[in-house]
Length: 258
Image (tube, rainbow, N blue to C red):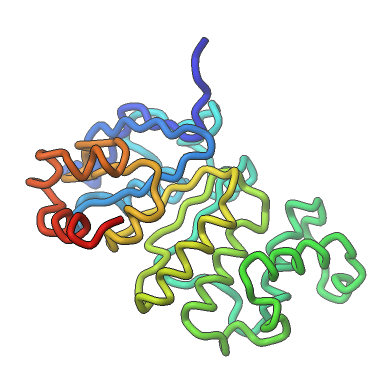
């Protein structure tokens, strides 16, 4: 009996002109797994995310979401099939309140599609779901604050809320802790763990503390290829990975504990 993976890439390649950026990537992510995608700058990590989320189409190969091919679908079609993505740059409505951002994000998943703002206050289920999300991301005390007036870490938390609002079961986070202090990063790891319980998570991350603290498995991308895909312990001990990328980061992680 064949396994249906939450996300599967089969010999995925991407060329820009004559330049091959992604070189035959194979990756199979189990439902509920948390996977960190790491690698040096220019390795192809963002391109890989763009291929999975539909911003780019692959030059060849298959991308499957819960067993269904998605490589020729648009980003919004892929989103409606159960995949949501956040970006390196915070992507929220700055002039709406925290609550309004979340309520907008839940509308489609609740079947409202295009709804004029004047009717939103009467949508009990949308309001209740938005309030639940407020508590999940711990911004209930900032309910009526405009998003533009939140701290950077709070804006990132709001973006996580918006990303999960539609009920997607596969979540892509692109450098979610970039620009945060150590204490903010530590709190954010716990938040990500809590809000993605039961979901499949892929995250691009440079902070090795975040990687080893969050991921069930690590995919190491170098020059457009996955050179290792295994548990954090196995990746940490992989000589090929250390030589290609991790180096002193591994030693630092080992010295500092998990």
